[in-house]
Amino acid sequence: MSETYYERLVDEEALVAYLTEHLGTVDDYEIDRHQEGHSNETLFVTWGDEDLVIRRPPPGETADTAHDVLREHRVTAALADTDVPVPETKVACDDHDVIGSDFYVMERLEGDVLRDEEPERFAAPEHRERIGEELVDTLAKIHRLDYEEIGLGEFGRPEGYTQRQVDRWGKQLSWAFDVTEDEREVPTLHEVGDWLRDNVPKDHPHALVHGDYKLDNVMFAPGTPPTLNAVFDWEMATLGDPRADLGWMLSYWRDAKDPEPSMPELNTRFMEREGYSTRVELVSRWEELTGLEFEHERFYRTLAVYKLAGLGEMFFRRYLEGNSDNPMYPKMEERVPALAARAERIIEGEEPL
Image (cartoon, rainbow, N blue to C red; front, side, top):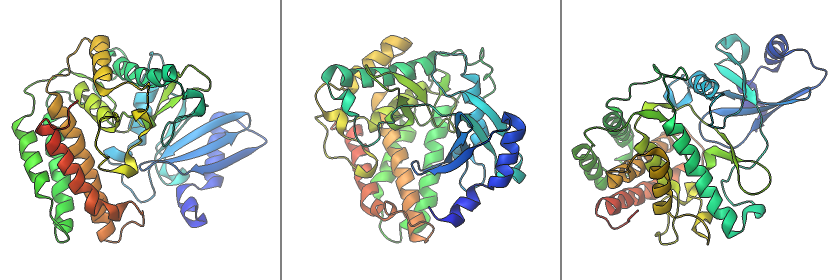
């Protein structure tokens, strides 16, 4: 972490004054940047006896949907009295004079985010099975919520959500292709986009959707058996199609029968081991808990991979334009065509649920 970048993230003097005003005076405090994550920035704050987290957009970014931390705060606060586990929010700030952007403060919870490897305490078949069950059970809790009752009735426009997702990601890809197609073309993605547009479900259930629900956006509490104690990263949440959430989660979940991952940089593989639930088992459990059917499953799984390809292609454009030094970005030259091939396999039934 360079000091210059840290100073762009936080004006310590102004932040300390703000926290003192809203949370009270303390004798000792400490502020550190959390290095994980690819979207919003996370700061860990020790404020006297309290361990806190601050969420803010990257410096220089506008508050678009992908970085809207006040939106994230709104939904997290609304979920406080539900059975969806979220950290307690403390305060939100839209005064850019404090640290240069919107931000909010929440409690810091203890536990593990399963990103690269399973914790040793979970390395038994009965615990491994519970990881997948906790993950899908919590997603079902989100989708079963009465969003009107918790004050989120105006949080989005659920009608037409799925069609808008297809249109939006087609536009994202077009933006990326304006630059990347001078390096290499990915004609399969155009075909996948056409198939998605031709196969958008005519209607869908309405629910609160997380928008980026996957294993490394939740936390498991210390100890065993595995207990999911927090869902993070709600900045993409809205009212929409719960089947799209499920399809996105499944796109990251590996079965032992699967071919090599198309984007190994973002694919955890430990759930291929003995004991973990299969995708079919996760879907059956979600259907039982929500009372919904995962209709058009090939469409939703294809849409998820199409979105991953869109992200990858935007990464590749930023690399080509010199707007990132992330070592993952140049690899997208090969990774995105591999994702396009995966989407095609799903469409053709060659990569089954």
